[in-house]
Length: 270
Image (cartoon, rainbow, N blue to C red; front, side, top):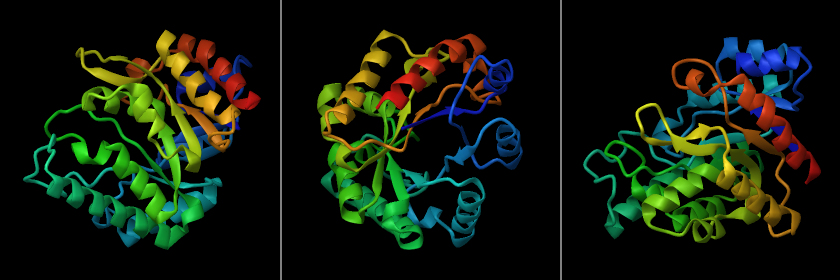
């Protein structure tokens, strides 16, 4: 299993100094950032796609195909969430069965559109967090049954974001292990790892350094892979660090230097 890391100037500096080694940088589809990252290591692109057909325009998918070919990105990823304006009158925390069916139909349709374009073997869908806040992820999109149906009915692969699963479970009032057990791990293709904590405004967030319980969760997931319950994914990505206001406050050189090698060792040992 390969080890990937979010591109950041701090990570690049560590590579220059010989204090870090990784297999790939994980990058958004930003040309300048990809060019900077490729000067150090191979890259792969993590796309900001959603499983909503209205969001998946021909122009957007053509761009995805170009980036995938140029960078050797093995999978086209999409987040299991509808477009932001898909259900304007729906309460974000709805438990109405009709709402749940409508969201699921949207998610299935979007994932099917990606499969039609790229083939089921080249598409992976990612579980998203749930913060139970207005304007955020609608509750039906994080229900374990919905996630499993999207994967099973379209035949695509699954990208497990461990922190997203834990955050969704908490807000749904589920035990985190029970939530994880219901994920479609038999179709696992990629793993994302981050720490959970609070941002500068005191809000719960991920994309932080790993602490004690975060490490235990990485081990729990990898234990399933080692035991053969889930297949070996192509990569484990540490989604820490980056550029711009969203990430620059959580892109510390010392954290990367301490935690990336440990995660790389875990990934390579599987």
